[in-house]
Length: 229
Image (cartoon, rainbow, N blue to C red):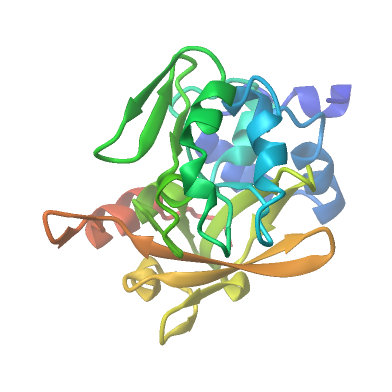
């Protein structure tokens, strides 16, 4: 990261979201795409990632609203992300042993929530890649954030290392169009993610436990709305 962006490293996450919107888009891109190391926090080698690419139209991607903050701080403490693959064949799920063998050291798997907790503080939701479900069932309030401009998140493809912003126009709620608020996603949504110049569709639904949707709109709205536009 260049010296002009070093000043941003110590910013709290909330201030980063506010300050980011005051920057010129080119400056934001410079901050987000500086020396990407995100994948190294999850995998110690690329064996599973390369294996995943051999499956039908599969393209691994990390999704989370504060990936850019990780770039600035360089530490994944309390960071929650989802790993998606969009394997059309559904056969990647049978490669669990290869998946776990490739993970960075110091992890624990919470099978009931499909979450991998790393000693670094990073948590990765792996529901989609380990179940083969067409929809990634996620705690949406941990992946997306409500801003005045609409629902927001960030993503990074394995094959296209640039970190990209996910805007409301790319988050299409089932039956509601672009997601302007978290409630527009309560029944799930389709994500349009740009991968090597081509948009790919990924499907997300709220995580359900004991038949109760774990989607707390009050908490999502109260705690995650930013003051930026």
